[in-house]
Length: 411
Image (cartoon, rainbow, N blue to C red; front, top):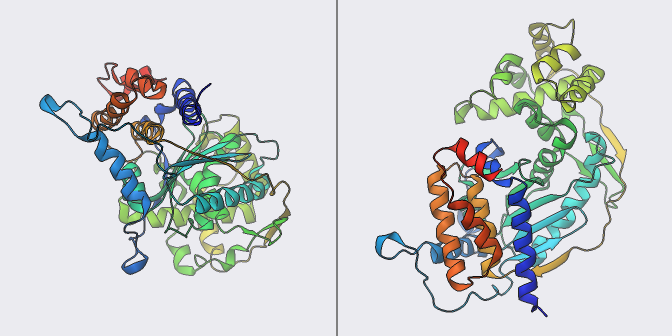
């Protein structure tokens, strides 16, 4: 009969294998939705000494020691033991969260995600949705940055078998802001209805829904009227980008200093079209969901409306018009408490090696392979029968001469 730690090992190995066999690492070759980072807070509120950065760094440091000819060597001859609760998994009705944040904080995030999901299904048209979401919640920004880079505060992709979100706690007792969770969850869920979206559509929806408010008893959700947003200014209207610039956002990323203007413009267009052209916008979204090319779907839905005239109309409306609040009943916000399971360091190392391969941090594929390979070698030296580590290692042995070759192999 397997021991409890073996059961956890096999279950997480099965998760990693299921994701891999479904082509999860193809994410490395596709853009993800990334929220622009604000400068890290200074002073006592900044993260130092919390579990996330230290734990993630220790896992990677243990894996990256090298000997002669650059071959990985173990930094300790002791077996990899369960990480004393440092890494744990929380499973609820719709979420699977892997975290090194304190367990009560991770459980709080799972509960909030369930409430938000129940509130978002109506505006997203997901009443019959069954999609689940995977989440890696790091205990702090330092741990997050090791795998997602320092230029963002959260990242989400739907290129994995289940949508995958990378998040960071703000502190040992501080979960990510509700607005950030709502924003990222909108990215994770909207793909089921809209398919692959233009960046301005994805960000406009997420920016619009991140202001979601939930009643204390979680039975009603409300979106405040647009004119109560800090973005509702004449200056923002003057800075609204034309639709042509937003279509080009998918072709080439703008300079980092200009990104806030793009996010604000995505919000402005989404808010304007929802208030003034709700039927046409719904038709556009329906065509996106059917797989119609985005620009063609937009032209068809807004037939008779020249982009230039829409732009001038939107600029005249933003900052001066009025939009009504939206409110709707929420069902299914209450769900059974999430199951919690502690993970061994080996299991956590394998999952993080998989995340490394996905390329959230923008590293070159050769560097991702090197770092992931070091982590997996360390696991296999200590636990030669670890199935997840063995499977990932076998994929690393493929001849990846280019990103396209990697995509072909990993799919």
